[in-house]
Length: 160
Image (tube, rainbow, N blue to C red):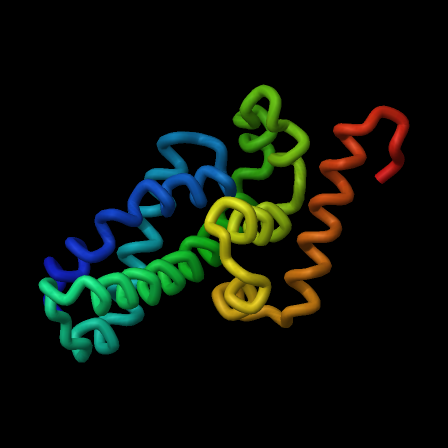
């Protein structure tokens, strides 16, 4: 597969990737840069795998399967880089939290990732475990803890 074929295949995913990056870092410029960095890291690290793959742009089913495969790979890189970057931007992120979503952005980045993959990207628990390379029970734990903490902010008097 040529580099241009990959870009053409991944282009429809750009909005989803950006939305996921914004889940990690709620700043437009930082989220855009995170997507760009993730794509570049993916291309560098997985270059041999990408070049080996054959791709027929006319085959819609194959394109859809490849797009899903690359989406998962890009999400893995985006998560890894995003967690490190959010750790570096801890103080700045406090000022970036969008109004009305402060509780969500106050959660640990790994919990936000799992919740974003589950509720926004609609991945199953098994797929999330595969993408993040963590055990299934850890995905379930992060989903439970995230919902519990957010629910504690929504219901007055509830103690998370």
